[in-house]
Image (cartoon, rainbow, N blue to C red; front, side):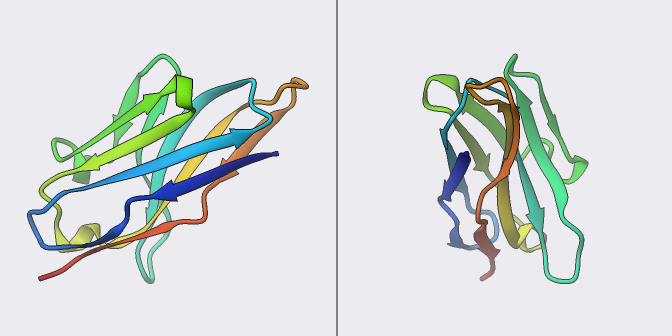
Length: 120
């Protein structure tokens, strides 16, 4: 019903920057929260940052001051600006969104994931 498509991952040197984008499409009436998660090899998936429809944000402590999450409600798109990247930020980053469909159902959808590698 609702699909998320991510873009913007890649290889970057330590200290560099990347911006991830995630566009939602399908039977969307409203999106309450959009967020970014990441999963490194051998580790559990963790929430990196999230933003509500009211633009309240929260971040995992390890990225505070370096990452910024934002959203464009008209485009159903969420962004993650990542600055001062560190090797420990290397992971597959997944977009998540949950909200309501046009027929008043709910959705909780995930993107396919995009690889971010921070290495010299």
